[in-house]
Structures are given as structure tokens and as C-alpha cells.
Length: 313
Ligand code: SER
Image 1 (tube, rainbow, N blue to C red):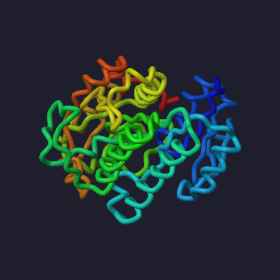
Image 2 (cartoon, protein in one colour):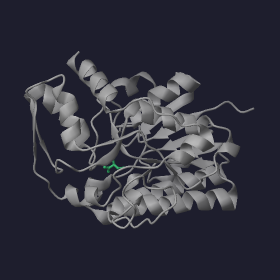
Image 3 (spheres, rainbow, N blue to C red):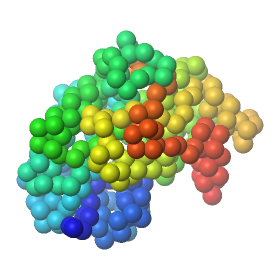
Image 4 (cartoon, protein in one colour):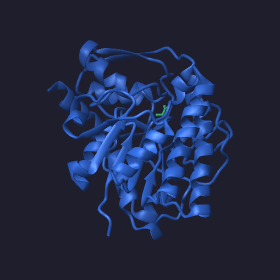
């Protein structure tokens, strides 16, 4: 059997650096190459790192060949809020980079590929509560459009060429180790930093906006669980609904107040409110639970405790 060698693209992002560490623990630090268009920061400097612009297809293929890569995790993308600043570029970057990775998987015979989708694939006429796996998908952001199209491409490469591609529709991801970049759910990260630094937070979503969210350690666990499951258990080759909690700004503020009693939140919705309003309030992830045994660990209370304790240090 070939030795597992992993390439992670977009390692400098919010999920990337934590997933890199999860992959080090699983495969050994020498068997994981993290890459990003930017120079490595923090923990990434401790492992193997290659600077990579994923739009340079030749360099991507070369990197895979010279390092005998067997699995690619492709996380690089423009998110929902930044995508709206330059829709044409978001389309080009998110779609072409995925196609390069899928082509590499097919042509260079990779064992597996991971690519994240998002709750942004859903839209205003999707059922909002307990959103099913198979339902109406009418995304309104360019980010959501690229994720929906990307899901179709993943399934296409699986059915047509047998590429073992796996994917999750992440909810908002919340961590404290790396700052997020340009998402609509990012308020739920910023709020912890501001709560500790200033005891107040001005939120860009309205107080009662419910969104599906997940703590970073659960996101890393879900991703690795999915990728390590036997192929026959992966019945969905577009992307799996995945979930652990849903809350609104009022509820996360209340959870923080248990530790910082004089914390105050004010809400002044901006353009991101319309994006949030088009997304589900909660997600039905029963297929992930029954197909490959997904189980989450963190709810709002446990997450808040963990983040505030760690950030205080
Ligand atoms: N967290 C992402 C965003 O807000 C959703 O996938 O853009």
C-alpha cells in the first residue's frame, strides 16, 4: 500500500491551520504538506510548508507529483462576505481551483480529495428549520453559487471518473486560534475577542438571527472522520449536511455573560443581514450520523467556556 501523503491547500485560513494539526496527529508531521498563497504563520512554520497559488495549475500538479501526494484537502476559497466585493473573481477562484484539484485527483490518481461546501448552498426558499439533506437550493451569494456548482462537480467526478471526493456543508465555524476571513458567521468569533478586550460588541447581524454553527474542534473531527471512513460508507458524493448547534446573537451574548457579567451587545445589521436571512436556521444532519457515524461534542455552553478560558491565558 502507498504511504499516505497529504497536501492541504489554504492552510493559512481559519480552518486550515487547525486541520493541519489534526492531520499531523493522524499521519505524522512529515507526511503533511500545508500550503497557502501567503507565507506561513504561527504553528504552520513547525511543519512542512509550500507557498502555492492554487490558480497555477502546473505548480499544483508538480507539487503533487514530486511529493508523491495521495490525498488533497482543498480549503482555499473566498467566503460569503468577501465574495460579494468581487463576484467575478470569487467565481473564478472558487470554481477553477476546485476543477484543478479534481483534475489532479483523476489524472494523477490520488486516493482521496476533501473539499468543503457550506450552508451557503441554501437560499431564501429552502426550508429554514432542520433543513434536509435534499431540498431546494437557491443560493443568493456568489459564494453559495460556487459551492452549489462545486458540489455538482464533485459528484460528477465521482460518478464519471471514480474520484473519491468527500465533502461537508460546514455551518459557521468558530475558533479562537486563527481569525476568520470574510464570512457572515464571523461575528460569533469576533464577539469573544471583543468581550474580553472591551466588554462590549457591536454585532452586524440582528439580535434574533439564528444560524447553524460549529466549534472548530468538532469541524476538524468531522472532516477527519469523514475522510477516514471506508469509502462504501460515503453514500453522498455532493456534500453532507453537518451540524452541532444553532444560536442567535442574544444567546451567545447570554452565554458570555455567565463569565463576563457586564458584557454588552448592540446590534446594527449591515449588508450581511440579507445573507444570513437567506440561510437555514438549523440543519438536519441525520445522513452524516447514520452513514458514517458523525457525533458532535460541543454545544454553545461548552464552546464558550473553552474559548474564554483559553483566550484569557
Ligand atoms: N462561514 C461561512 C461564511 O459565513 C459560511 O460557509 O461565509
